[in-house]
Amino acid sequence: QVQLVESGGGLVQPGGSLRLSCVATGFTIDNYHIGWYRQAPGKDREGVACISGTDGSTHYTDSVKSRFAISRDNAENTMYLQMNTQEPEDTAVYYCATVRSCAGPPNDYDMDNWGKGDLVIVSS
Image (cartoon, rainbow, N blue to C red):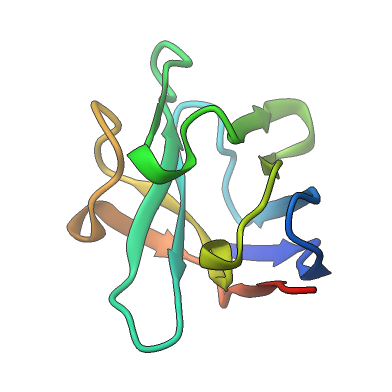
């Protein structure tokens, strides 16, 4: 059974950092495009970042460029999202997912399998 489980969320002060992890079970992530999405209260879900399973290229939505970094550890079947210099606007539930395409920031319709999400709150 394909399963993705996020962890690492919580409360962080503005300007702080968190690293989200996502462990995959039931399949190996080696050749998959994978991504992170988020949904803030009262807003639509948006694609945050993706990393290609073909060439390792990464793509980010404009609001997180230079602050967030997506990575993968195929040996551990795990993906990560390092979030630095966080802002209150980053408050959201974050989801990891396998995605059908990673030629730019991930789109909602590219989501294939996804986890239940992990809450990140940026507040003083």
